[in-house]
Picture 1 (cartoon, helix red, strand yellow):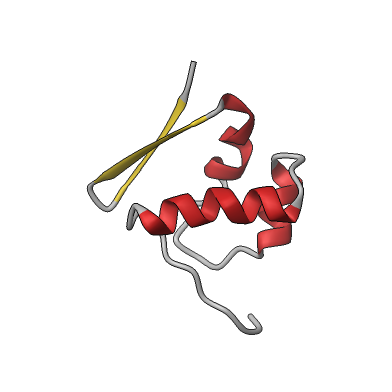
Picture 2: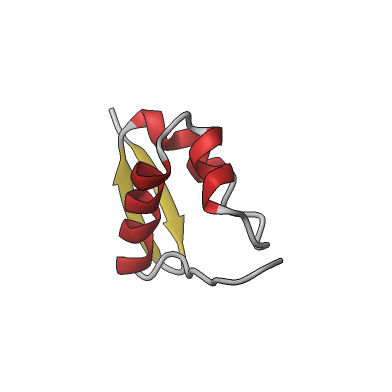
Length: 67
């Protein structure tokens, strides 16, 4: 079983454990990486890997700095 994230005309499949992280993304606002990690009970490094896959697929963008 996989969870599919679709955005910007792209689709990326993930393990079901990542679903809580993915559900936080479609809001269109800024979300801290630590928040995404906590939502899915992942380490920040694992959450960064998921986000990196989305960026590589051009399904998400990443920004830095303070909100």
